[in-house]
Structures are given as structure tokens and as C-alpha cells.
Length: 243
Image (tube, rainbow, N blue to C red; front, top):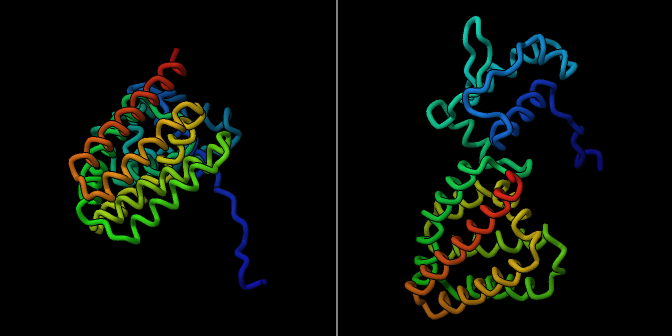
């Protein structure tokens, strides 16, 4: 047993500081151009040392989330201009609730770019093993409890990932896997409404038929409709929070 267990580790104070400010910025609670309190004030408010604050801000600047200006202090940066690959990693692993509205829309637009093509290729390239796996997901969706949001979200991700595998493209499954944490975060919010669960599961059944028949045009259209439905519903959720 001993060789199977690894020491339990908690985030360092600096990592916890970075995580908190990433969430505040990516959720839109801190706005682009907003000035942060001084390092001294942040240290007092958060009950940490000034070196923790300073080093955390330096890392946030490296990601493109803040700008450190002499005699001014830290200002929330325009991450569209200043963001780095490290920030993209923070975004796709984000699991702290809602995202800033425009950022969420942009993320869903990126998903649409490759998932529509994924569906088309899946219809053309699928094998019997892919169909069997997709059928299993659909059967599991039929038996899952409506309030088991985490399980519903996981099955939804599984369905889309199987389509990516069926496409025959080696990169599409990796792309979707990269988005898994933020995908599940948004899906958990989305599937809180029982009505959309049935709608999405109906989309999955229609997609299965299209892929089974190798109907690439139908698979493309169904994916377009499914993603548009999801984006519209998430937008309504965001509007409700903002209101």
C-alpha cells in the first residue's frame, strides 16, 4: 500500500493567490483596466506576506492577466493582447463557475470550429466499434438520474469525444481533451435545467443515426444545431447572473 500512496499536497500561498485572481479576472469580476490594490493592501487583506503577493503578481503578468506599472501598481491587462500560452492553459482548465460573457462566447466559437468538422468526418470515417461505443453512451443517458448533473455532463463529454475519435483525425480528440475541465464546468451549469437534458439526448440520438448512415451533411447540421442550442442556453444563464 505504501508504494501506491503519494504525499497529500496543498497549493502554495502563491499558487492560491494566482488561482484566486485568475478566477476573478476570467469570470469578469475584475475588469480589464481595473487597478488592483497595492501589494501592501493585498497582503493585509489576504493575510499573506508581501513577497507572496509580489511573486504572484509577477506570474500573473507573465500570463498576460495583469500589467505591473511603475508608481501605479498592478492593473488588469487586456489578455487578448497580452495573454500567453500559460493563460490559455488556465482558461481550458477553468472550473470555478461562470466565465466572463464575451470570453465564454469566444470559447464556444472555438469549439464550434472544430466540432462541426469532427461530426462530418465521423460520419465518413466511423467504424463499428465507434458506433457501439456511441450506442452505449446513449443507453447510459437513458438510465441516468435527471439530478445527477455531473454524470450527465460526463456522458455528454464522452459522446463528443467518441465523435472526435471516430473522425480519424489524431488531433481533434486531443483538442477536446484539452478543453475537458472547462467543458465539464460549463456543462454542469447547462444541465442544471432538466429540460435541456432531454433536448441534448435527443440530439445525440439523431447524431447517432446520421453517423450510422454515413450522412455527413446531416451530422454537420445536427452538430450546428446542438452547439447553437447550447450556446444560446448558456448565454441566457450568463444574462441571468449578470441581471
